[in-house]
Each structure stands twice: as structure tokens, then as C-alpha cells.
Image (tube, rainbow, N blue to C red; front, top):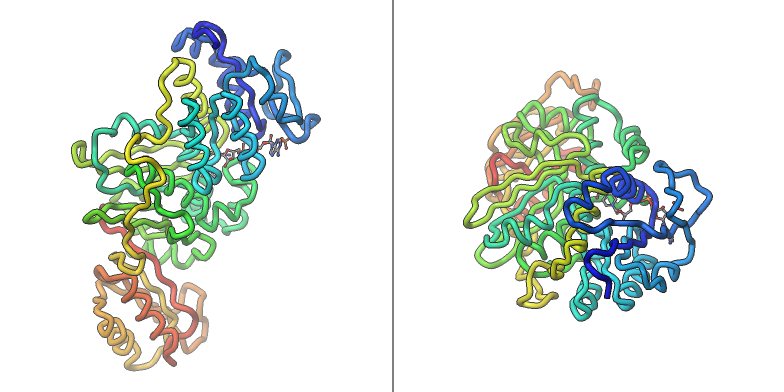
Length: 442
Ligand code: NAP
Ligand code: HSE
């Protein structure tokens, strides 16, 4: 057993964006970290794929690179394995081996924990080890510790947030500078915000991984990952951003979960957020989470959700917990044991306001017909814009015109039925565009 006053020896797996950010903090803030815990936190070995690659933070002389995972697992001196590789299979193998070898694990890998975390949490629990993951949700925002500890006494009523830095950066740059989607995505990749496979970001999967982890932390239950409704940002167009602004809204990728009468409603989707709400002001690679607790009321956390130093800061926080010798509390609940399935509200039953954009034939009676389809499905129109002069370039010299409107609260099922009817009608051209709307906090 390692004495608490001995250095905490780390084996890192991954020396990319987050690995470099972490190493920089451990080197540059070494004395500060020692002052907090009384233990030096020291990296001994780093596992990489390409040892000859130039690194953004220079490798200290006393740290060695390896391409062999066993150099971390079989080293008796290494007390903690920090997994910052990404992907599923290689980190799963490494983490299992590390836990079975009696080593604590820290990871930023939300995909792994959301999709296959339960078996790892079970091993960690059986062995009495830390499996810590502060960096896996919202980068530098200390949301894991907040839900487990700071707000731990509260029954959470709802949580709502911007959970993906890449998507928020893309939508912000499209909104403020009018830049095209793929140009901004490329920049996000260069800045180290995006996943190695950026479709995980833009299709909403990364935000869904984080939402699944937040649900476990907030309610101690499992919303089956494959059942979470997920929609990404790839279809968000400059014209929808512009129409949203005319109504006084910004388009954001939102992850949301709320407990309604003992059942969870949850999902990830682009939504119009009213510009008076704090969430609409969250820009660039920043993330934010709003938690509504029964005792504390609403709490709003805001900070950098991606990038080397913010994410490294969250990994280092887990290392502080381990260096201090705290008892592991990986899931934040000891009863009932995970996985306890959540009672879920079918996505079709979700109630929301909606934004709808149609390309309609510009002739008498069409707006009446649109309104009739909505009324047939119990949907009331709240406000509308119709562009007669086609100044958005969508339909120059065309017999069709955009008709854009917002609804009062309606069910997802009603909206789906109405849109299917409109799409099949002769007077609506193109597939209707539809997003949820947040006029105030749920
Ligand atoms: P990255 O820049 O692509 O770095 C990955 C590192 O892992 C590289 O050093 C790579 O080695 C190494 N690696 C990958 N597969 C390996 C394997 N099979 N064997 C040995 N080494 C391997 O990734 P990242 O952005 O730092 O992300 C790492 C993890 O943190 C991911 O799970 C990601 O989801 C998560 N995360 C990232 C951010 C962010 O802002 N980037 C924020 C929160 C969480 P080489 O360098 O030799 O290729
Ligand atoms: N790709 C992720 C994002 C990294 O953009 O939010 C942080 O988890």
C-alpha cells in the first residue's frame, strides 16, 4: 500500500489535446497541487500510438513514452491510470486491466462510460477503486462533483444545458459572423474541440453521451442510451438562424432531462432559445448547465466545455480527490445499484413550443390551409413571418415563398402528424423544417 505522503504516480494513456493540457497543469502548477494535498502528483509513463510525433507540450525528461499498455498495467509504482485516448475498445481493455490490477482510473471518455460504463463501475465498486470522470461532461465545468456533492441533497427536477463545445462554437460563428458550417467545423477541429470522429459532435451523439451520464448522476437511474432521442446540428441553415433572430431567438444544441410525475423526459436537439435567457448568451466553445433542485432552486454553471486546459483542469480535479485519499463515490449513489432503468416518457408525448418553416405556394388560401392542418392536430399558431419579397434568396422569381411560424405548446406527436400532412399536400414544397422553442425555463 502506498503511503499518503508518497508521490501519487500516474500512468497516462494519450498525449493529445487533453493529455497535453493535463501535463501542462501538473508541471506548471506542481507546487500549488502539492500545497493542496501534501502529495506530489507525478507522471511516470505515457502511452501513445506514435512516439515520434511532435507534442504541443514538451515531454519532461523524467517522463517516458511507450506504445505498450502493459507498461502502465504492470508497473507496481503506478497508482492511477489516466485514460485520455478516446474510442471504445482500446480504452475499455485498458481500464478493465487497470482496475483489475488495483489501480484507480481517471477518464475523460464519455462515449465509453455512457455506452458500457456499468460493467466498469461494477469492477471499480467491487475493488474499492476510483473510476473518476469529471472531464467527461462539459470540459472544465465541475458538474460531476456538483451533482454528487454540492447539490447532492436535492431531488433534481430538471437539467438543461449546452453540452457540446464544438456545436456551440459552430452555431455561434454561423450566427455572429455568418460563416459556413463546414468552415467553422474545420476551425473547431484545429482548436482541439472536436472529437477524433467529428460526426459524434455534429450528430448530437457526444451531447447524448454526456446527457446519459448527467441523468445517472442526477437521478441514479439509467436512460438506455440507444433510446435517447438525439438530433444534431448538421441541418441547421443560415436562413433558420436568421429567422430565429427575427423572432428574438438563438439556435442552440440543447440536452434536456426533466422528471415529470416520476417519469423522465429527455433528449438532445437543436432548439430556439429566447435571447433573454442566459443559455442563449453561451457562446463559442463554452458550455452551460442549468439544474433545478427541489431545495436550492435553479443553479446555472457556465464555463469552457472543450479544449486542452479546461479539460485538463477537470482531470486534475479527479487526481486531487485521489491524492487526498477520499473514499471512492463513482456514481454518486449507493442505492439502488446501477443499472436501475428509468421510467421514461415516450418522446412523442413531450410538450413544447415549436418553430416551423415551410416553403408554400404563394396563392390565396394557402395560409388558411396551413392553419387548418395545424388546428386539426390541436396546434395553435402563436406568431408568423411571411416573406413576400423573397429577400433571403431561397426563392427568387419563384411561385413559392417561405412561411415561418411559432406554435403554442403542442405534443411532439401532434407536430409530427401535422408536418406529415403538410409535406404530402400540394401547397407545401420541400420537407418542412421544425425545431423546439424555449421561451422560458422548463
Ligand atoms: P486526441 O487529441 O486525439 O489524443 C488522443 C491521444 O491518445 C493521442 O496522444 C494518441 O496517440 C493516443 N491514442 C489514441 N488511441 C490510442 C491507442 N489505441 N493506443 C495508444 N495511444 C492511443 O484526443 P483528445 O481530444 O485529447 O481526447 C481524448 C479523450 O478526451 C476522448 O475520450 C475525448 O472524448 C475526451 N475529451 C476531449 C475533450 C477535448 O476538448 N478535446 C474534452 C473532454 C473530453 P498519438 O498522439 O501518438 O496519436
Ligand atoms: N468534442 C467535445 C465537445 C469535447 O466539443 O464538446 C468536450 O467533451
